[in-house]
Image: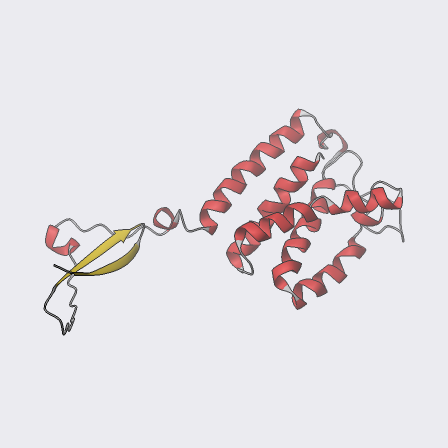
Amino acid sequence: MKLRTHITAAVVLFLLINILYPVTSIIRGALLAGVAGTLPDLLDHLTGRHRGIGHTLLILPPLLLYALKSPDNGIPLLAGITSHILLDLFTVHGCPLLYPLKDTPYHCLQRKKRIRTGTAGEWALLSFLIAAMVVASLVSVGALDDAIHPQPRNSSREEQCRTMTVEIRVDADRDVNVTSYHTNGSESILVDFRDD
């Protein structure tokens, strides 16, 4: 897989985890996950063997311990490296999950269905991941809250209005304006003291 696919998959996995278990800011976590999605190939480049120590399951237990100790950094790193290993299981070359104990590459698909790097299969996967990233990003920031959990719409005008009681005591002789705003399911109240 190309780096763009690994980075996108890492961000998607982080966003999905962060929706279920929020640990850090979306931007910071997505950046860390994206960088971590490239680390297995970088580690293998440094050791001189592609699909070696960076693509083994043996790298995950220390990362899991780190994620438990420091979730802000550990979970995005774990998401990035895990997504990289998972994606490489779908490629022609597979992934040596037990390296250096066993050098056998493991695959998730039958030989004819495996994805070759840079082909239409990878582009299709990347397109799906980008769509998933957009949806996960929107869910993460709450932009789809009304679509996911729609509020019942009342038919009559009286049922749509809310009664709000506000008690304000002002010592000075001046006007007070109280305005309630409703935006995207949230409510804010503005109190304005007007000076003449």
